[in-house]
Amino acid sequence: MPTRTARTAWNGSLQEGSGQVELSSSKVGTYDVSFPKRSAEEAGGATSPEELIAAAHSSCYAMQLSALIAEEGGTPQALDVTADVSLGPDPDGGFRLTGIKLTVRGEVEGLDEAGFQKAAEGAKAGCPVSKALTGVEITLDAALES
Image 1 (spheres, one colour):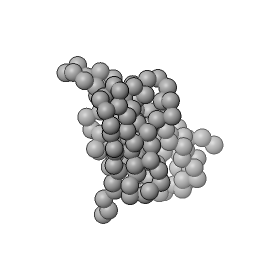
Image 2 (cartoon, helix red, strand yellow):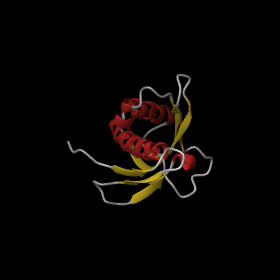
Image 3 (cartoon, rainbow, N blue to C red):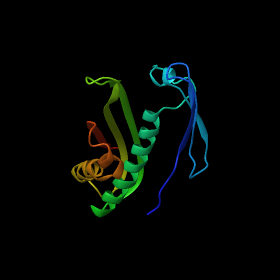
Image 4 (cartoon, rainbow, N blue to C red):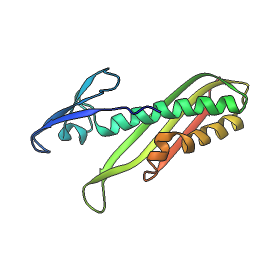
């Protein structure tokens, strides 16, 4: 299986510095990062580790869910997956990821709500990114749409 690479070039202190994270394997872009923007409500044109984790988690979950829907006998027509990754203070000092909320709305042929929920929960437990993030509480809001 492949290894994927990202690289960050950082200059300066935590509060005054900034950097650029490059998606090296895909070469799809280089994005600004800074701690003040990371810890602010508005991202201000910069990404963050939390946003990059959210992107990884939502895409991994969608892939895993589509596979499990097929295993349950359904055909996914459309899956809309959002991952909200929260950053907060760590009681032991510093910061930590305080939670991840996965939200999925699916259009699926050949599967009822119970079958969809089973696949959705299975994908939450089975996607490789979920497995990597076992130290963070992951919640799920899943529903079929017609």
